[in-house]
Length: 342
Image (tube, rainbow, N blue to C red; front, side, top):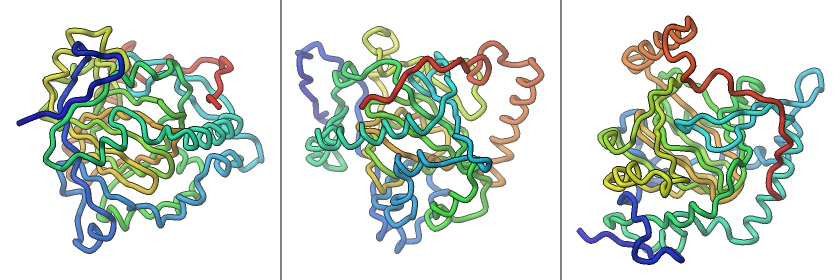
């Protein structure tokens, strides 16, 4: 089968080709709801276009409005801010800072990025994406990764609905993902060209894109041989040693990674992407974005995945497993003064 290639700017014949991809299966919200699809039964990713466009969150969860959040006593909200790539095998440090100035800077950066057309650019530019059929196998423009700034501040895995329970009413998850399930949600707030490194999560993930555009690179569990898994302990999943922002500095891993077969999803404002458990994925933001990831396990999945994960967490807490090689200890440092790009 012919694989569509890019000719990256300045890349020439020696440009890194990387894995081959197909577009992820896609369905619009109307067709999804009429067919009565059930996400929890799926073993392959599904992009539901416009799935959350009618949810209150799409109007209420702007950077400006989130910046107005205050604790019950009226004090400002503080949270951990990741510096560098999130979910990477080589963990980076977090800083604790007030969210309001950071989010207001992101609001300005989002307006500027959309005006400049940054939402049309990326590993697979929108014009090129629109030309591809579902059967086409293609490769990405990895030269784009060399344009990404390093060490950007990024709020990842913020348990916002636990801190502010009233915000749950802004998301109607049950209408898209019904059924008995233990679930929890994390918010991702960050700049354009931010990267979430290659990893997988133990639970299923319903990723809701409130605003902005993100590119997802997804690899089914059978591609694990090309993913260079890290031994670093992480409660929610497993990370990779492959750093997609520095593939030219990892020639052996890049060569192995290039043999993988993946799926590509362009997730836009109002879309939802279902990522089945143990699906490897990496994410690149085209513009500053607001996202909510809802993780869930059925009672049966709790037994086969939750129980072993809980046992490892207990051993880790007892310093008997993964101590000194984990993502949860020794990460937080004082604020260094980084700000979101405007």
